[in-house]
Length: 355
Image (cartoon, rainbow, N blue to C red; front, side, top):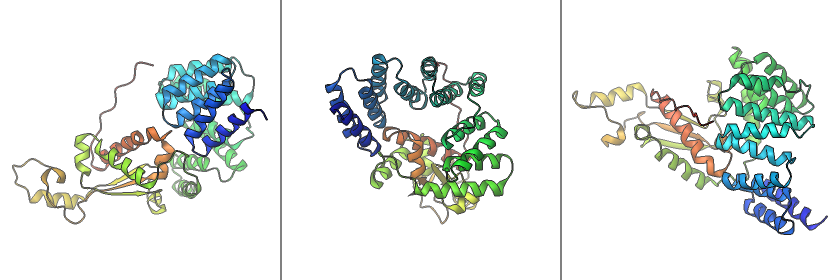
């Protein structure tokens, strides 16, 4: 094995183990050995993406593509970054079209069409997304991961019968495929099969407990600090409602709440004060006085009147593409949950017309 290959192999191994700095160092050493190595720049981009530096990652991926305009792996990595981290869907679609023009490998074609499908859905072009989905090889697929990914795409556009076939196919190949169990559970719930849905979702929950944390995951103390920061950064009208909340960080929802209908992959759950407790506080106030939150009034809450916020760490780590994005994911989830718990209707974001 030559030195370049050794540095690349070591870099990918370090990246998978969560040593982002080590992976970056290996990539830079590989570039020193061969400044024209697209593989080295692809590794450098991957390390930067793990750290949440999308700009540096894209710069490295595009350098890899400049050195080899048929380098599908770097193109896919860049297109995925455009789609999931940046929401720059037109750029993602353009890269996917480039890939489809240079590859004949079915696995790469499937990966590319699925990524193009996601980008088209992201930009709201449902018709083109469905055409892209129809262009996929019809299968059967050898890998459970492919059966699941194609099934999820069908699920997202409401083609439930085909989605069910593909989820079943994935589970026939890999019975403990957690994602396939989870989505089949959602599908069964959509069809009104609550018992079957609960069975699938509980199995997915059990498998999730065995899943490793991502290599970039912070320790418990740092995660708790991120939760506190996310709560403080909520819009003022929501932050005040949970200013005195009891906050609990646990790995995952319990089976008992999943049976009651809570999504096993929820990032957070907010338990608002009971109506009786809220009314009791209101009776103590002057009729003329405007309603205030406990945080504004400074009043000591009565029994059952304190909101409780549950944050599910493993689900948050699953949802965030990097450490850099973790607080953003938590804040968005907490904003939705606090608003829902207190019956507040959030304004819909303005559509992004830039793409």
